[in-house]
Image (cartoon, rainbow, N blue to C red; front, side, top):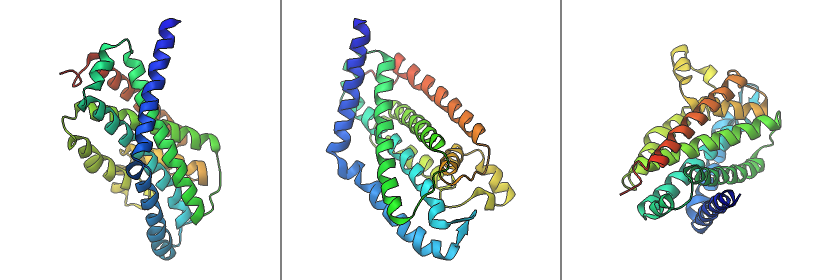
Length: 258
């Protein structure tokens, strides 16, 4: 029981440190998603959307709103853990945690939970902004919550793995710039993959972000390009796989000990 309490204290401490960091640098963590979302709605929603008309039976601005929310949840969860974990690694404070009585699972869950919280916070901010521009139906609350939670967990874990292998601050921007951003924009945020030519449509199916956005959009609008159950099974596979990899790296101290 005493050991469990120690782990609980360590878990809460990691989360508290990360949450304080997020709010301390709020112009970098909270403000940019809000500004870019407003710009997306003005440019894509009103200017371009008025010419596009409808997408899958919904006004274009309404169609892209869930995609914009999921895009910000994914990028925020990833950015939270990759910057927070690498910051601890760069300052050598992660070494102090590793040699303490704090379990590897506690470290992993602490940073992942903080990333999920930031993802949920940004998702809430973007949802509030979205409602200022468009009304959103609510098809399935459970699907929305599940898709949000799993997506934030997956990309929080991916951020930790990136931070483990990163050797400089430049390294933590490579994956978001050259992998995450292209996959997100090609994940169906601004269009339906059903409109793509067959070859590109099939290629899109290997992009995991397509399934995350598709499920999230289904939760709001009730439309889906694929199978919702299959998408959730895919999320679980990624979640367990990334959890195992991140835990192994932290447990072994790979890239963390001098």
